[in-house]
Image 1 (cartoon, rainbow, N blue to C red):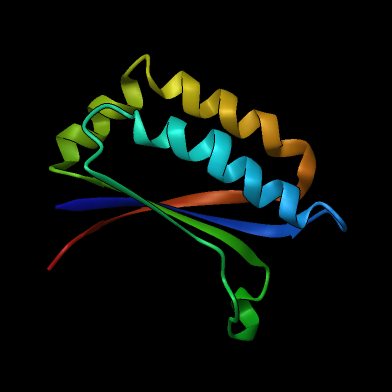
Image 2 (cartoon, rainbow, N blue to C red):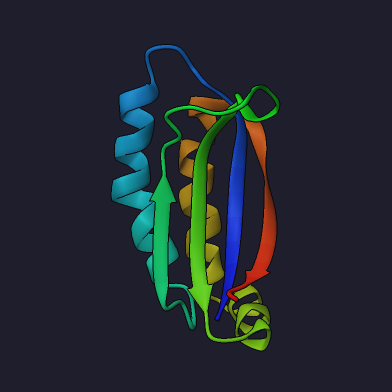
Length: 105
């Protein structure tokens, strides 16, 4: 089992927090769940973090059966729905996101 995680860092615009997380539930989660080979999708809203990570405002994890499945998902036409969903909330925050792929031990 491999998990591709996205860590979103920066800041949600003041007063947009609830709208942002509702958009994550309504638009991003469905788009992420339809990714080719996705077995499970989890999204976290951090409640507390140590100082170097205090600017993390969203963590997303998608489980895949293999690294090859991740590569296929990223090359799939289904990925465009996820890209479009993310673009639809981009105006609600300043920041960026990075990915990491982990193997479950």
